[in-house]
Length: 150
Image 1 (cartoon, one colour):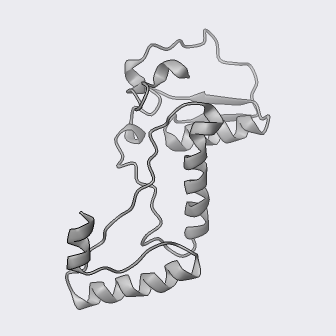
Image 2 (cartoon, one colour):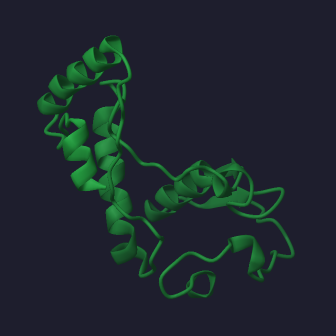
């Protein structure tokens, strides 16, 4: 895996040389079709549990939609049922560098959401209550505070 990454950022995986096994294994506990973020993550977690996994991808790993998404891992604005999963995902992303010994390029940042109407402002204010219930660090700021931050 070391040859897939530069010192500080991820190189395009599809630009790196790779080898294809001459034969697909005769048996597997699980066969995953699709080598995007979901397929690769699923294969990785199953393999960590000792499950024999075969991952099949028609093109290049992470070279389709996974290679073109925005890369956001966000908590703000989520359905309340998603929040525990997203918080756990944040911990996983933050721990990947230590676990695999490579910088995967994850940087924890933040998001700004604006409100251009009273109705939108009410939605943002309602979100503050949801965030508070889940221990999420978020706040409502005005335009003066925003100018100071950016």
